[in-house]
Length: 270
Image (tube, rainbow, N blue to C red; front, side):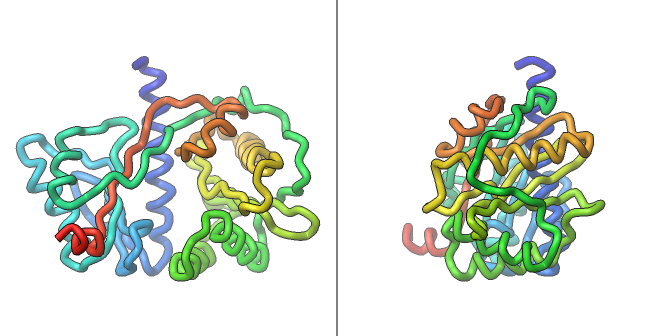
């Protein structure tokens, strides 16, 4: 791996972690203190809000550190995510997590694009705008939860989260919404920090997919970030979306791994 590739991987991971940490402006989430990892926690039974990122424990103390990091969630029977990579992916940590009842939730391609190579906007039936009002933000949360098919509880928390934390203006977080014939159909978020823009929540309602809308809203968010002075676009992609991002010029630099634990799964195993 070249020094440039490593720097890109570091930028991908740093932006992704910073974006989730930004959610701690929401009163239901907080950033926990730890010398070994970035930890966000809540009292909500949803792993999206209970996370361990970028853990770096001394090898000889790995089990003790891991038990301490996940113990805050297990003691309250709260499901959680443990994120590994893309910079470092420790097989020893993976084995320890598995013995503690964690299972692999998914893998995501860590991708990046130099924004000087950004393509022009693609033709699309959708009109894309940046979310600036509370009514637009309500449309954004409703469309996002429909695109990702969240259940009722997560949909309510998602709405509460994003209507509670700052966005637009001088904040690092921006939201985008795509419309077709007056109907909101797709979403994207952009988190801007240190000349890097990270994309997340890029989703299209199922009945509007395969019309170029996902590409269009992605390009709109990236073009706006470039105007704000960003030089690099980064994201973690699902398997389903990889071909779309590669078509826009993104390159995969590594892989992020997500492991999950929940009291329900532990009970089923027992």
